[in-house]
Length: 141
Image (cartoon, helix red, strand yellow):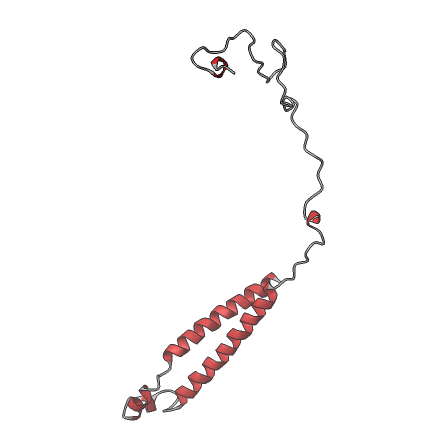
């Protein structure tokens, strides 16, 4: 299907450039009066009115081809996606991750007794006195 997509894309670019060139080559409605009074259109390859008919027909054919290639590319690009029945179907099944062995377990909120050898837990120093500079311990109750 990749080659068909590339072929349609190339055809679409060629038809788009062809439509642009053909539209720019055509005379506007105001140029018809000037061509009738010796503008040189009668000596052209297609005659006085032949170029207008040829260019307009070719433009119409290229525009139709452009629309067909656009629709074909849109149909090729539209691929229905099947939604999973559950969100859990999109997650691959894995085992629960295990914590590394060098990290201590989380604290439960209780402080370790002074002098304990639990790594990573800081025990309060029982030998320190409370500060005497107006701390909360000096306020009478």
